[in-house]
Image 1 (spheres, rainbow, N blue to C red):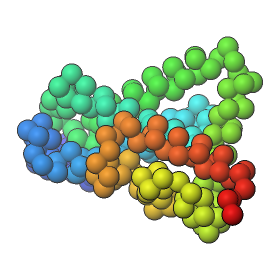
Image 2 (cartoon, rainbow, N blue to C red):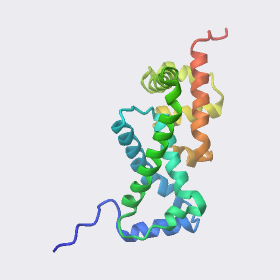
Image 3 (cartoon, helix red, strand yellow):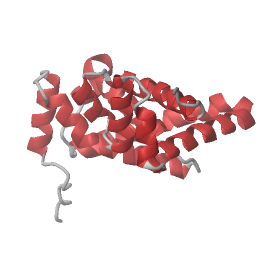
Image 4 (tube, helix red, strand yellow):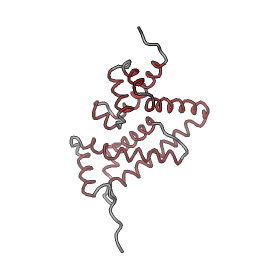
Length: 201
């Protein structure tokens, strides 16, 4: 009987090398990990939400990706240290990601249940704001960005205009990964207010 083929995503040696580098704190290893697997986590978040009849805004998707990354580092990276190499690292991480995303979506649904109409309206508003930031005329967006603080404008430009991941933004700006989502939300709210305010002069 033939053995099943190895997954194409990464060879066992590559898995182990990257994992050991992350656990040893090797410079650049975590950025490589995030760059390699954040896309996988985002795909799992979107698919899991779709299976539950939900449509995620980009910010919600990235929050779920950040949750998976935090889970990977929890308790001195216990999840990563438990990798035994019996599958590719991508396959192992996908199992972790599905568990984290499912739990988070279930928690969100439970918290929203008593206030379904209000929660739905707020979520629709957030999604519309995010879609507007991505689909609106670039000149209009740039005009609003010029009215933001320098750091806020850079953050919005990186995420919504250059479509950078949270991992890339963290690497480029030095911001902690778990602070990017809240900062983006604040910047989007500020842009929404500015959009309805007349410009001085």
